[in-house]
Amino acid sequence: MDPRSEVLLRQAELFQGPVMLAGLPADDLFGQLPQASGWTWHAGDQALLDSRFGGRSHYGVSAPEVDFDAAVLFMPKSRDLAAYLLDTLAARLAGRELYLVGEKRGGIEGGAKLLQAYGKPRKLDSARHCQLWQVTVENVPQARPLESLAERFELPLADGPLQVVTLPGVFSHGRLDKGTALLLEHLDNLPVGDVLDFGCGAGVLGATVKRRYPESRVTLLDVDAFAVASSRLTLAANGLEGEVISGDGIDAAPMDLALILSNPPFHTGVHTHYATSETLLSKSRDHLRKGGEMRLVANSFLRYKPLIEAALGNCQTRIEAQGFKIYQATRG
Image (cartoon, rainbow, N blue to C red; front, side):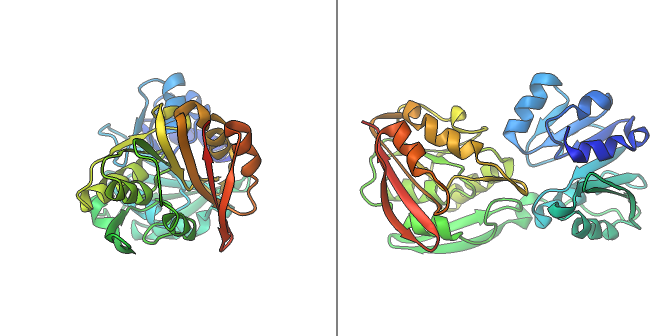
């Protein structure tokens, strides 16, 4: 069981009523708290929770319309996202209890300071390298529309500026990361057809390709509901069309692709997690048409080339710069 859940269960008597668990892990916590409901923005966690506890968890960027007498937020990696989520929950908890639980290395102590906006927070427990905080919501905030928290910036590309819209919690919120910037310089001579932007984040790659190759049909895929929402906003800001879908990994992607583009993730929250990227590489052949191409950027220290060669039989390193490599491979 997740250590944050273990800390919660040390105080299980506090959570036996209708409690909202926001950002909960896909473990057995629901089994221990039978009246709890959940809210997650991770498509993989939602699928696992649904398979075991059908109907008790909601997926999306807004809180579900169910009644709850208390709420627990599992501290996300992004402090900006934590502030939005806490306000959203606190707005429905006047005079009632709001809890925050998280790992010490995940920023729980800094996150706990956010609780001061609602009342006088106190630490209830510290164990398993985690902390549990509680506040009675005396100062009720007004829930903010998510889009009001969006950050917008412009990318000066060769074929004109691209508008990018990012939401709290999305990778590289409010700026272009170095890896994606490097890949944007190497999008020449791409095959035309069905294109996948895997781990799309704010949709920079998908939007760029759709504008540069308008005859291509672009699908943008991410596991995170806030990334999915960001990608839709980015496409709309540029007057572009594309299908944006949520799903956990390459298994959720279309088949018969002409091109897979990616700056693949290797973190889940504060933890290093290579499985999603390695599965993308190993299963890329199943999703590419014959002659289809995969082009991606990765940190130079990641040993992706042997995995790509094993899947597709070839792999070219187009460039290595600024701590990143651009890989290109074609399905024979």
